[in-house]
Amino acid sequence: MVQFHSLKKIRFFKMDKGYRTRKESIRNECKVFVIVCEGETEQIYFNSYRKRRCNLIIKTPNSDVTDPVNLVKFAKTQINKYDLDFSKGDEIYCVFDADGNTDNNISKAVKEAGKEVKVIFSNPSFEIWYLLHFLYATNRIDNKALINSLSKYISKYKKTVDFSQLLRDKKETAIKNAKKLNDYHKTKKNKLNSVSSNPSTQVFKLVEAIIKNRGCMD
Image 1 (cartoon, rainbow, N blue to C red):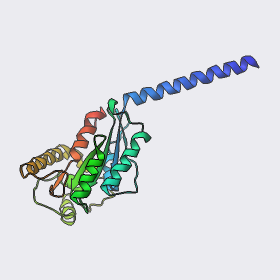
Image 2: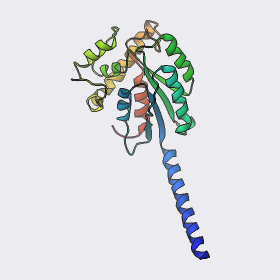
Image 3: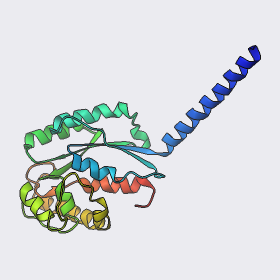
Image 4: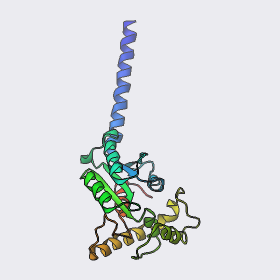
């Protein structure tokens, strides 16, 4: 009986050690991006970048808050939850819109984010990122006009539908147009993270970071 229990203990220890080694190995090889989104549209879009056999793990946790400041605060709680290690390339993002927010709310959120949370701001809303896949324009636009314009390129557009495959081949165009809009606002001396930066989006920064760190084909 003594020998039996000793053997059992040794086998358990080896299995446990092997499990831990494998788990740590996988975690060390993969970076983790936690993306906290204001709405479901953003979650659906960023979840489309999840793929097996890639060097990047993407997490999009659900949140009950939508205002920028509390969204950033929620994002900070996810750092420990997902055991993020910034020294190894892990990152956390907070994605929200200008729609319904004031410059005061936006600036407070950016200040709250500090250096830990990377703010990804769109003006007037996330859909401007979709529209930039098809055209470049600098005219100020509200959400109603934005959806109407987008519907010309994406038939029967709905916020809860995944259009990633449709947008896939136009990604570089969107990145180019978003960067061009940033340059436009800089010449106008418009602060990018403000209501004056309409239209604009910083989503391209997150998309580029994902592409760079995934280590796999689209």
